[in-house]
Image (tube, rainbow, N blue to C red; front, side, top):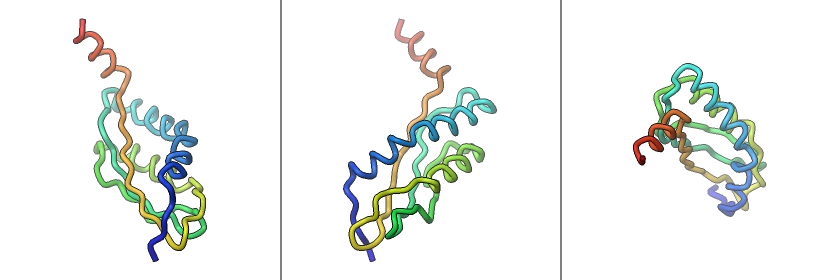
Amino acid sequence: MKGSLAADEIKKVISAAKDQVSACYALALKTKPNLSGRLAMRWQIDADGAVSTIEVLEGLKHAELDKCLTAAVGSWKFPPPHEGVVSVTYPFNFASRVDRLDLQTAKR
């Protein structure tokens, strides 16, 4: 049964986990320093608030990053949805320090 959970409740959990997301990205940058772009994921929040059925919908073609983020998202605990389960699709946008420096140089 499809449930509901307020967007701000979902964002609160994701924001609280920003260090986990950043750690995954930092790990990926070690092997690919210019890695940047959008990575979209979808997961299900079960009736007890646990996460299941995690998938990368649109990625950066970096298996380590995908694996790390999948593990991170799987460890998150959300408030229990109202009357069922909730499917979440969320985009993570990554920009490496190298990319930001290139953009700043281009603006000069």
